[in-house]
Image (cartoon, rainbow, N blue to C red; front, side, top):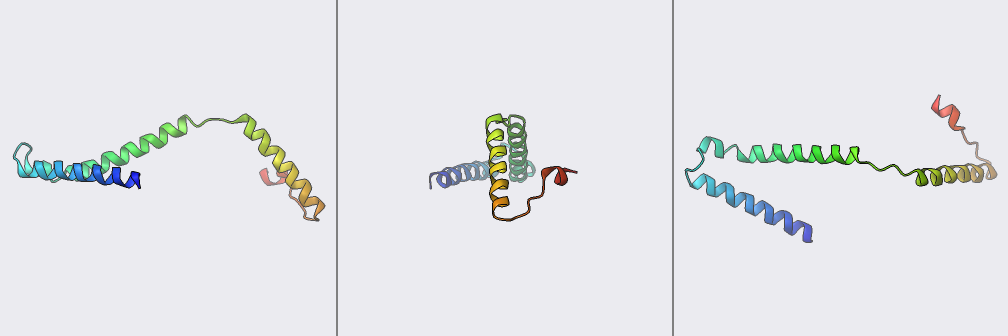
Length: 94
């Protein structure tokens, strides 16, 4: 609930600023009408930048990789005990 309040507050503040700029003649009206479009484009660029930064800083977890490999081996053994044929990973990767 708190997150939606923050978003709504930001939306109201930006809308109030935009309407205020429309009412005054500080900025030419032709530029003022384009401000929402600039805002949306800027927000999209910011989102893409944050995704890119997150991907560049993506942590590697060697310990978790080892645990995952152990889980895979255990699952294969369990399935073999139950009579299920398990495809070796060598065949899948080829």
